[in-house]
Image (tube, rainbow, N blue to C red):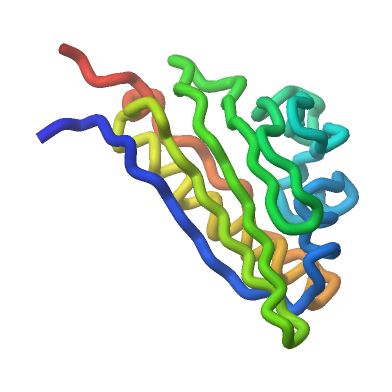
Length: 164
């Protein structure tokens, strides 16, 4: 049994908001800084453009390229964690924003791994994404962030690629 995986992660939430508000929450630092552990986003959100996610101290956390941008329904970006050693292969993060027609939006977030990664590396996203998406939902619905602590990355030993 291999310790490597191409497994995708998918989260679906429903948010009492318009597609435009959810798009803004995903692409505006005024929002991301309140629910995404203080991180700010930078991009013009056009296909082919670069995008950056910065930590509160200004260091780059994640960077990539906008692969698809159909405001306010679909945003797909490459995802390259800038600080992790060894470097994780690029993955693809896609947000699909569907208006349910009753004052709510179905938000589907998918994290795809075209290159196999150590299974343990999925742990960070699987801890972080539910917190991030719950924070987005809370902020849009109540105007208040959840105030959850920033999850810590796995121990260095878990970040090393398997030997052999």
